[in-house]
Structure formats: C-alpha cells, structure tokens
View (spheres, rainbow, N blue to C red):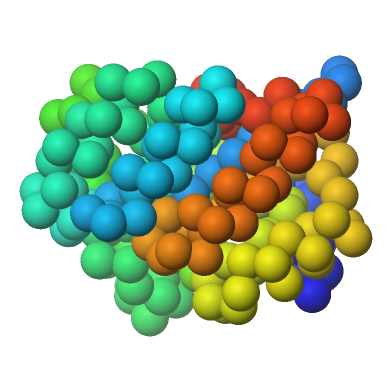
Length: 213
C-alpha cells in the first residue's frame, strides 16, 4: 500500500491555488488531517495524543454530526486545531448536481461557523471524489480544495501494526498532507506509534495553513 497514490500525484500537477495535495516546506514539516468526525468515541483519544506531543491538526468534519457531538467540536477549537468542511451528509459528490454539491458545502460552513466564527472553511470532498463541475466552480471562484498527498490507509481497518509498518517503509516528505480518520480505533493506535516517532525524528506536525476557502 503506497501512501502516495497515482490520483494524488496527478492532482499534485494542478495549481496549488486550486487543489492542495502537498505544501512548500523548509525543513521537516508535515500537515496532519483527520476526516469523518466528530466521533463521540474516537476523536477524544486523537486529541489526547495531539496534546501530549504538542501537535496540531485540521479536522474535516461532517456537518450533520456537529449537533450530536458539540462538545467534541468545542474541544477541537479550544485546543487550537483547525476545522475543515467535509460536506453535510458525506455523499459521493459525483452523485449530486452542482447545486446539491454546493448546498452540502455551504450548509456545513454555516454550522462550523457557530463553533469557530469563521465564515468559510477549507473543503475536502468525501472519499476524495472530486467531480469536474465542482473543480471548475472552485477555479472560477478562486477557492482551494484541500486534498492530501500521504494516505495512512487507516480507513481499511487493518491492524495498526501493519499500517505503521507500511508508513515506516514509505516515510513522509517535507510539506506532505497526511490523511487520517478520527472515527475508528485503528487510527488512535496508529497515531500512538507514528506521532512520537515522527517527532523524535525531528518532524514538526502542524495543521494546514490558511487556504483560499
């Protein structure tokens, strides 16, 4: 399992003002991101690990889960992490007309704003499905889609030891955007192994910088 897929390599050829897969970096910096929260069981252990190691991350949250777990979202913001937009219902965006895609994004932005006061947030398409009509819309409106370059494969639900061994065979590169998910126990176990190892190796683990949302 190569954490760098052909798709993300191809998307990386697009202007970074349109799709961010990897960011310029001077030195050993990686950008950690989590999709599919907030989760009442699994987000808290992730936040505990980040706090323990002084790391920051961007959490791409699903809008219709926010009201069910407001305390989790409040903690994410309170501890200095960034909120991202992961749609309202987590659909395949290609199944929706453009108007439906935009409503998924805009409704989630309005809900996220209640927690951090920010009007628009970086958007990451669920499952990485990025329709051409949405890509063109973002290009016309000079907005940036937040993608990734380094996939932990934690959503496969494979044992954390196997996932960690795979990442150790393919170490991160400066500026990479790391994809993880805070909705399963494998992520916490994987993070508990990789995060201290990265930091011990001199990596800075940061949230995404501000993007054109």
